[in-house]
Image (tube, rainbow, N blue to C red; front, side):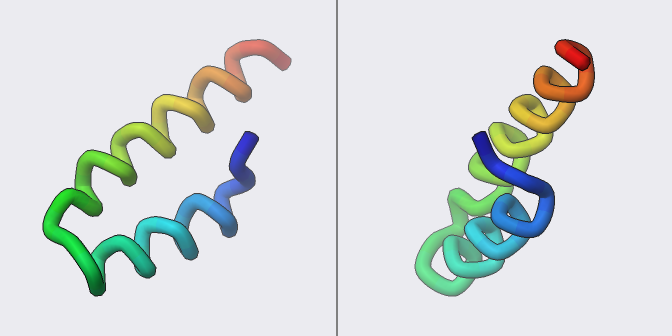
Length: 39
């Protein structure tokens, strides 16, 4: 489970290495939305 901060950190690290960061960011947002929906 990722927090928003962890998610943004992971995404920023990925952006430096790869152009697939947008996919990671989308996956992160899906996880965040799913976790919000559960509560």
